[in-house]
Figure 1 (cartoon, rainbow, N blue to C red):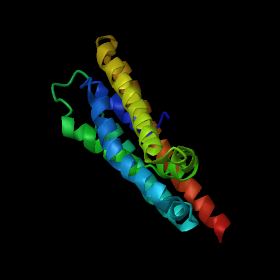
Figure 2 (figure 1 turned 90 degrees about the vertical axis):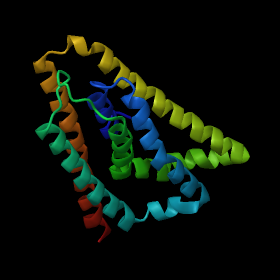
Figure 3 (figure 1 turned 120 degrees about the horizontal axis):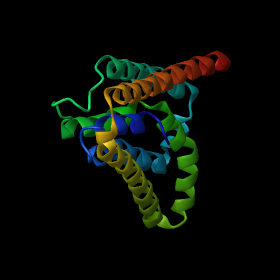
Figure 4 (figure 1 turned 90 degrees about the horizontal axis):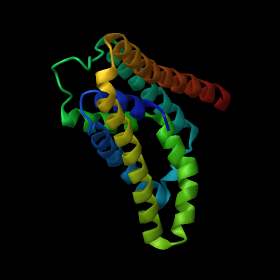
Length: 189
């Protein structure tokens, strides 16, 4: 799903071709425990309006903060400063944890997939989890690798546009999550 994690794969991939792999590791550090929690019954808790509203407001605020920070401090692919490997892992972890859509997806679509996988026992759930994570890994690596390999074609103007778009995506998703949470809160009361 194109979104905040993909945007940071573009941003970090401009300087580090393996950034997508590291982002996927950070993403997996949140995703695998969430899968296990949902498998053991947390899906109904995550569907509570109060939880969805809280996650949406907090996650939206974090995404807006990250998007504005990215715009303010937009890195240049021409910069000598390199993205540290641990920063990509932390970015994957943070963006996943701050993304309300991630939790909503796993509490709904993901939970339905887990129910189907459960028919095959623990190995079915493990296979679904591994396949899902490897798809995330392949996508994020592909994005960061393509950006890294094509950076010789990037001018300063292209760099500014790409990082502007990435920061706008993060900020836009954050705003959308906050508005959606407020709308949910109004309709719930």
